[in-house]
Each structure stands twice: as structure tokens, then as C-alpha cells.
Length: 226
Ligand SMILES: [Zn+2]
Image 1 (cartoon, rainbow, N blue to C red):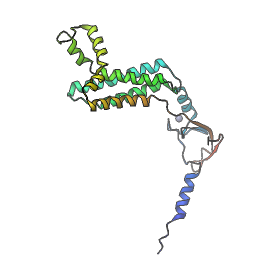
Image 2 (tube, helix red, strand yellow; image 1 turned 45 degrees about the horizontal axis):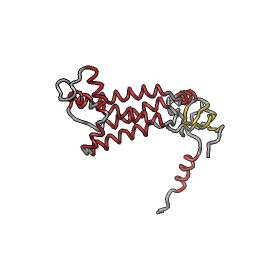
Image 3 (cartoon, protein in one colour; image 1 turned 180 degrees about the vertical axis):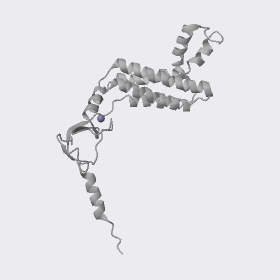
Image 4 (cartoon, protein in one colour; image 1 turned 135 degrees about the horizontal axis):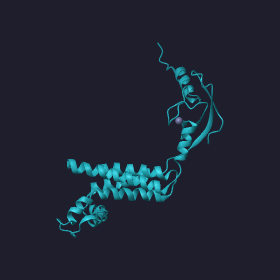
């Protein structure tokens, strides 16, 4: 009888993990074997063509960020308003999803840019999209049947949309704490997710014996940054 742990086995397993050799290397983007040469993007193997695509996505376009962010905001607002209109439930948590959608969409256009313009754009679009869901309610109050300004047509909707942008200030005045927290969290997600992701490329690494499925040998041709 022996209580000694099987340290030898553990060490062998650990030793295998420490080797820079993987039995199978597949591209993190397309999932295919990368051939004889591959790169590491943020620590994950990436084939040359996928890396080129990812590099192209690093370019910044103010117009693209604005269009994609606006579309995401409109989509999120439509879903939020649709659910509220159909079910009667005010699922304010959806506005957090709205912030996430807008943040990711703006980042697609912003690429690797760290400019605060894109962060502000994501927050402003999220603010507008969130508030626009209240525009029909505001319009009902301002329209001919309401007790507001008695506006009609396009003027009514433009005025309602502009007025709805102030909804968060009314939330503060009415001390709607939960609403304020959810609103702020949505804005925070838009701010956070519109920031560029890390883009750390290492390699190229040469994969020799790629046809031998048992144990390919990896030879790094560029050193990792310390
Ligand atoms: Zn790939």
C-alpha cells in the first residue's frame, strides 16, 4: 500500500503542455489547418489569408462607423419598442443589449482607432436610440389629440424625437433609480465595446511535417515579445 501521488505521470503531462508543439493546429477564424505557415493573433493560431482579412478590418472609417452604429441603434430601438408595443412589458434591460450592439457596430467601422470620437459616437448613438423608443409616447402627448403643441406630420415626429432625447433627465428628476442605472449601463457598454480590441501578431511560424498527423514540429521564425 502506497499513498505516494503519481507525481511522475503528472510531470509528464505537464511537460507535454509546456512544449510549443500542438498535435493539431487550426486557424482560429476559419477553423482549417493553416498549411505550412501560420501566425499567432492574440495568442491564437491564424492562417495567412484570415490574418490579411483581420488586418483589413483594422482600418478606420468614420462613415462606416456612423452607418453601422446607426443601423444597430435603429434595429435595437425597433426591437425594444416592438416588444413593448406587442406585450406591454417594458423590458428596459434590452437597452443594455442596444448599447452592446451599437458599441460592436461602431468598432467595426472604427477598426484599430483609439480616437475618442468613436467612443463618443457609440455613446451618442446609444443615447439617441434608447430615447427614440419614447418618441411615440411623446408624440401622443404633443399631437393634435394630445395636450401639447398640437403639431402634425413630420414636424410632430421631429419635435418628439428631439424632445425624447431629454428623457434621461426626466428619469433623474423623477428619481427612477433602476431606469437610470440600466440606461447608464447601456451607455457604458457602448463606450467599452467601441474601443479597439488588442491586435498582437506573432510569427510567421513554420509548420514542418504538416502531412504527418502524429507529431508536427513547430519552428518559430520570429521570437515572441518578452
Ligand atoms: Zn483561417
